[in-house]
Image 1 (cartoon, rainbow, N blue to C red):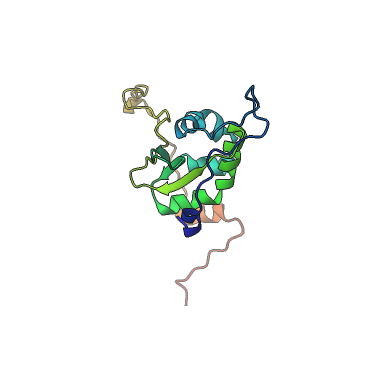
Image 2 (tube, rainbow, N blue to C red):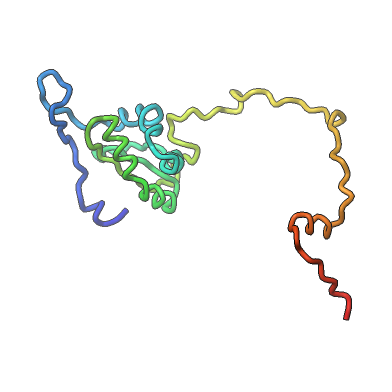
Length: 166
């Protein structure tokens, strides 16, 4: 994490002007649990394919008083996610109607299969593998061409030089 990010405290309890509350009072920032619940259904689908692929490899972690903390398995993955962080901030703001404090950290125990709310099938949930009888398989036709013939076919117009002649 950069020193600027550590030095600047995350904005918390930013009010929404003219929020949907009946009294017109401001609402508070969503909890990490609320963000995690909306992550798969609302936030990830709003992201670009590039951002979705990068953020699909992390998980939410609990850190009291830190807002929403998203952990990734290594520094390189974190750096790649930082490149598209604006997409996530915009999706969070679109989903919750306000800026949401969102911190990205490196945590070696973060799941590379997705956040803990992701539906990752267990081996028992997978469909049975189809049994294939090897005797029923048909062999591919034999290729009578030499390696040189295959190369000249792959590269039309290529000339074969004979290096054995003086």
